[in-house]
Image 1 (tube, one colour):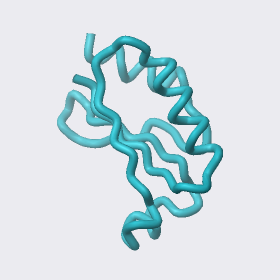
Image 2: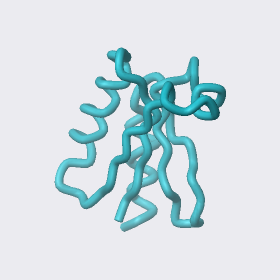
Image 3: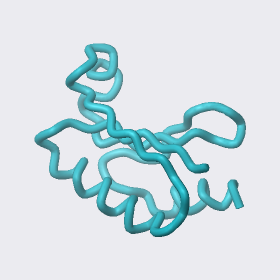
Image 4: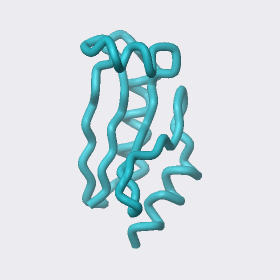
Length: 85
């Protein structure tokens, strides 16, 4: 199953846009999407503060990789999804 974490914050319209675009792109594919509020954790704020939204995915190699930030990179997400087919 595809696993994603979207690092986000509550007042971020880019974050909402990325979530909507990701869900539309993935369609009926089985996936898990966790939304992590960077403002709820000082370590996440330090790491992602000015980059949100940031989309990461759990790769076939068994680690988390960053796919994009600010806007959904449909090519990067599509290439990532192809690794699982």
